[in-house]
Amino acid sequence: MMKKLFLISMLYIPVASAQTAADLSQIENYLNSITTLESNFVQMASNGATSEGKLYISKPSKIRMEYAAPTDVLIVGNGDEIIFHDKELDQITNIDYDDIPGTKILTNTIQIDNKNLKVTDFYKDAGSTTITLEYAKAKDMGPITLIFNNHPFELKQWKIVDPQSVEVTLSLYDITKDKVLDENLFSYKVKSRKNSKRRR
Image 1: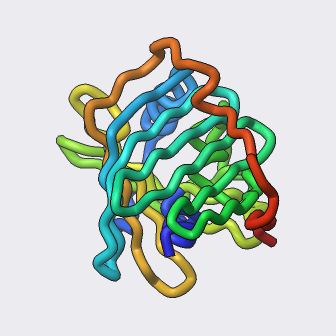
Image 2 (image 1 turned 120 degrees about the vertical axis):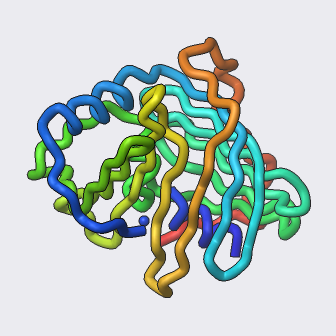
């Protein structure tokens, strides 16, 4: 179950509102300016599942999510592939980056050009900005909704909806940007392939 929630937590849908070029530029500039990010998170699903943990991002394409007990899951992306380690089951699964919209958008330089990366929904008020993005050639990859605080402008949540209509929200707390992170956070040595498999 945790593996499935991770895959969808990295696909909410507000009422559409007209975004301006300045709005898109602000979002692009914020996301592209991040070199590293460290944050605590709380993940909630509409089916009642809740978990929390620590998130690390280092561009390009590196991510680590440490889920606190009792979830007992570790996710490490080294830039080539993502390792999903279910410690309770002692099972390791390899996941492709292209399967997860959150990693493609948050760990890389992006351009919201409405060709390759499209805006499918947008909402802005005095306190927050919400944008839903989807890759044109997404295949099975669903959209991701990003929610920013406006003052100061900062990413606070992302949301996805899985094919079973389970909504997953990941909220960020105590965000630190652009600090030096230990590269060992993004490496993972597989001790045994006995309980390993590749997600297809």
